[in-house]
Amino acid sequence: MKLLVCGHNGQVAQALQTHLAGLGELHLWGREQLNMAHPASLREPLRRLAPDLIINAAAYTAVDQAESEPDTAYAINAESPCVLAEEALRLGAPLIHYSTDYVFDGEKATPYNEKDQPHPLGVYGRSKLAAERAIAAVDGQYLILRTSWVYSLHGRNFLLTMQRLLQEKPQLRVVDDQIGAPTWAGSIAASTRELIERWHAGRAGAWGTYHLTAQGETSWFGFAQAIAEQLKAQGLHCAELLPIPSSEYPTPARRPLNSRLDCSRLAREWDVHLPHWQQALIDCLK
Image (cartoon, rainbow, N blue to C red; front, side, top):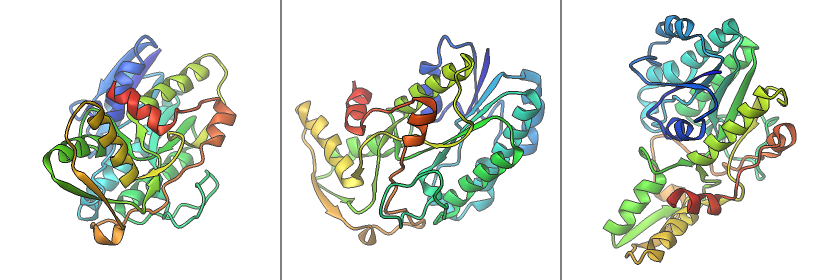
């Protein structure tokens, strides 16, 4: 089996490199092989490689910067995934594509399920939703996996930022009214392997859109507290944490206050279950 992972420098792609080992012939392609900012350039290398499965872990994830760079965000997040879906259909290969809680506006009082109507608040969320709709319109074999608050020990993310600031600052103010599930890239990669193994063994569930996040919920402030506890357990000094509302931390792009995603469909259709976010954080740091 020939597997192609697009976006090899990202958090999820880095985790996939480890978790997909032994499944087949693994190709991790970055900007040199696939420039997602130029969708038309993707077709020739894809046809030359002719993978049996395409995993798109590439994305424009600079949420605030996307407000001033909508063309780039849409090229990478919407137009290129559409090309991947078209080429996957041409090759007879399934496509696994990662999406986001930011396709919702966060105004629902309970966790979102896959039947809820998306309503993104900014360019990033709108570009990711455009990809979802384009992939579905191609009508091949696909899994769109919506996740949230992704972190790891690679790249730029909340975990690494907090680890640094907690040791540099005497005091940190962290938003406490945005609720979601911090999801370790390692958990996403491990679940992706399970999905691939079920498909390859002929035990695939239904194709379509699914929610894929850690179990449980917290705020960014709660996540920061958990990170601080892990640092303190190592005998390290940590800043004082103060909870604040989103209104005291204005950003160019609005964030959904409720980022909770109901993952019961994934468990029902594919028998895939992610660990609780607190356990995943411990596993990540180990």
